[in-house]
Image (cartoon, rainbow, N blue to C red; front, side, top):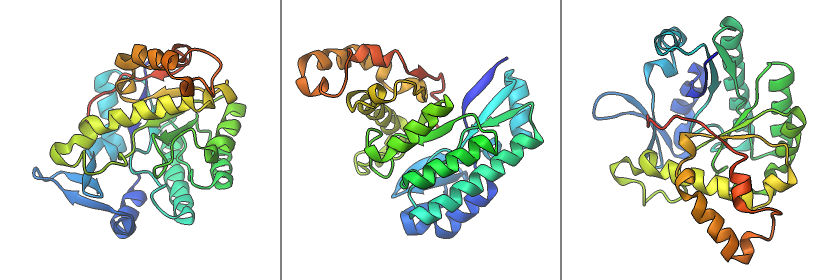
Length: 269
């Protein structure tokens, strides 16, 4: 069976909410020079909304043409954490419920990863449990940063602990880089900024001690792992050279890098 782990679906109601309230958090739904619907965050283009991202039937046709048996649906950037916590929780439930219905309607084609309101640990765990226990989701999707917070932030520890109990994977997908100006021209955000975000996220999970503290965590890194495969030896060398890189971990950096799974999708949208 061929399973596509990295693809994105934008529920209709979520897009409507972005059009309605997105401007309050720097998000706009626009058209690009070629007439395509795009999502822009603080001036940086983050997503091009293509037909299969909204149309399930089109998606199934494309899956058949490409020879994929199953897709695991996820919500991509900007996700829900850019909104206040209460709004983010509501939007997460909207996304998860609509995607769950798609999975029920097409059980031979789709499974899903949960969208979660990560800014509040209790709400995060509560929605994770609902998605796994009631909606039959197969894990969760997380951004490379949570409104600027690194993935080694202790705010995320309750989530890591609970999903470790389930023994289900976490898919890491880029979020808009914190440094907006550097990546503003020439669409540098989706071109290379996202990949740098993935590098930072992976190294923080290692050097911050998350992989040691929660040894059962399974991470799937999108976009071929960003530049991680090309920087692996350099990361290991820095582990050996800098004492602060050894403070929170009990093994060489390369050992942890081998514990991540890296998907094979690198086409920007």
